[in-house]
Structure formats: structure tokens, C-alpha cells
Amino acid sequence: MDTASLTGKDLAAAINSDTAKRAAALADAGAAPTLALVVANDDSASTWYVNSLRRAAKKLGIECDRIDLGAYASAARIRSELTARSADPAVDAIMLQTPLPAGVTLDDVSSAIDARKDVDGVSPLSLGLLAAGLDGFVPATSEAVVELLVHHEIPLEGRTVTVVGRSNIVGKPLAQLLLAKNATVTVAHSRTADLAAATSAAEIVVAAAGRIGLVTGEHVNEGAIVIDVGTNESADGSIVGDVDAATVTGKAAGLSPVPGGVGPVTTALLMRHVVVAAENARG
Image (cartoon, rainbow, N blue to C red; front, side, top):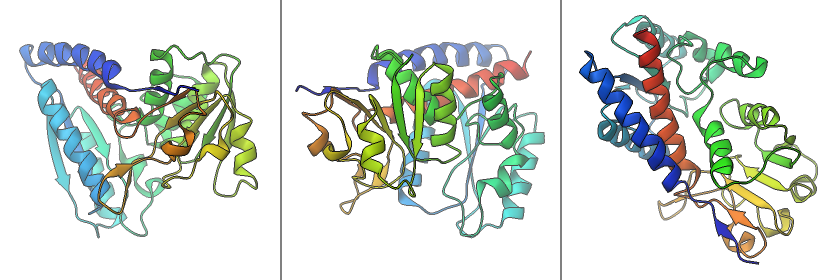
């Protein structure tokens, strides 16, 4: 079977074109949209992503202020910074980059982000709005998976989907978004007794567990669609996904590449969220 490459390049370009026009309009009206990017780690994969965000913001006319708190910042220090940025009228949007320092969780700090500026949808209020089907910012990576599937004309209504991963920033919100598209969703995780049984029963498999090569050809049914959300650093320093592409290719009908699949769409959607936040703030 030929396995189609479900790339995100064209979709990201279309989103970015619209975002650039809207950012320029905001700048012409008085001020460019501004993102505060709060970082409290020294993780190399995170650094790669942060740098890609800053490059994207610059190209689109978005001001991006990186606030580096260091890999040993306390929960109190992170909350204080998020609270200050939330109260700052010059800041339109806030993103807290993960991972966080040892002993600090998103639950400890994310509620300090004003939901109106929470462009990656990580605060309890943002997640609650999503669960209730109300307007708010949703996690960009989860949204990117759905947008990528829609872009490649892969129907979701009535389809069976297994999401591997249950984090609050990908797995859980993605399940909510898929349910809203009338998909039938199973969420698998590290304690799923038989992962292969859960994934091979699905028409669409989304790998979002953060483990290199977790999903192999043995986990995928013939003709399934596989979306790889993973961004893991390999031994040679390259970024690889959660899917063993070599064994899935030829069995799956479609597979998103890493890099070049979900990643560019995630970045594009995050930048669009920044512009939306700025537009909302200016009335």
C-alpha cells in the first residue's frame, strides 16, 4: 500500500498568510500583537521549539518577548511572572513553555494565566471552556491534529480514533475536539493493558505520548491514518516522532511526517491565536 505523506506545509502557509495580514492591520492601527513566551527549562527540544516560535513570530509581524526564568525556577516565581504578564496591557498573549522545572506541574502554575491571553489553552479555565463546548483558546497542538486531518480531507464523523497520550496539553483536549467532530474516541496511555489492541482497532491513530518509536506497524491496522505528534530528540540530536515510520509506511494509508507534519500547523495556529487575542483586546 502506498502511504500518503500528510504534510502540514501548505496548511501552515495558508494560516500564516491570513495571520500576517491581520497582524499588519493591528500594527497599522497602533501596535503590533505581542506574545510573552515564558520559559523555565534548559531542555534542548524545548529550545528548538522556542526558537522556531520566535522566528515565526518575526516573519508574521508579531512581537515575541522571551522571558527566561531558568531551569530551577520555583512555582511561586513562575506564577508571579504569569500574573504580572496577565495584568500587563502591553501583552496580548502568554505562552508557558514546557517542560517545567522538577517538582513544578502545569496544575501548579497555569491558573495564573488570564484565559483571554492563554493562547495555548493550558489554564483550567481554558480547558473547562473546551470541555463545555464554549469559546476559548484550545491547545494549539491538539487543534493542529484536527486541522491537518480536515485539510487532507480525512473524514472524522463516525470514525474510530485512538489517541495515545492523555496529557492536558495534547491527549485530553484532542479527545474533546474529536468528539466535537462526531468521532468515536478511545484514549490510550502508559497503563493501557494492550496498546496494540487499542490502536489496531482504530481507523485513525494519533501518537502523542512523547516516546520515540512507541507506535509501530504492529500497532496499526491496514489502511489506517496515523498522525505523529511526537517531537523527541534522538541520539544524534535530530527531532523524531512517536511513530516508527519505517514499519508503518506501506501499511498505513497516510502518515504525518516529523518534522513537517503537525509541527508547522501547531506553530501557525499559535501565531493565529496571538493575533486573535490582540484583536479581542482592542475591541
